[in-house]
Length: 116
Length: 115
Image (tube, rainbow over all chains, first blue to last red; front, side, top):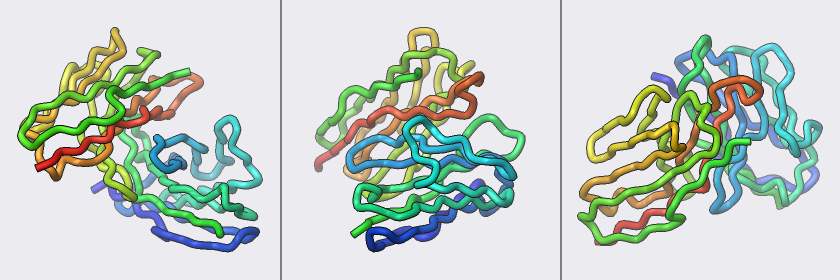
């Protein structure tokens, strides 16, 4: 149990376009999902916390208008990178918290974004 | 602000050695600590999770300890194998308050086990 999927696993896009990444909890409901970014050979940095039915909470330094997060249901959160630039190229990982649980977060397999 | 540090940054050992990876954190107000493995270009695999009230957890050849008061955790890998080669990440979950739900990661230890 506790499986989280991400789609797509890899995406290449042109500069100026928008890209949507989906994060789904497959066998549990997640009231809270988290989005992380990982630069090459670096650790994960929390970008934002996504709560179902409410606005996401962004970490300091993360542009809200650049990284749009929508948590429309208890099993799906989306991250849209708007007007992508090469510096947005990175590995994006989501995690999900089972409802009514403050404990282990379950991670998706990640999405590799390359902006040309 | 929580800071997590992992030492060493990289480690290369011959197969069969027992080894220890270290993790330290600055704020002892944690809910739990988790060790992950990450293979190149892949996501995270959870290895062990230790609750703040626990001292250690074991899974197979892995043993993780936690000393919350001193802000330290160690991951012990027994009889290392080439398949253990990966980056090992330590992460702490905040106990609550303004950092509610925040998982803070260390920079990782890159482990290479050579035959």
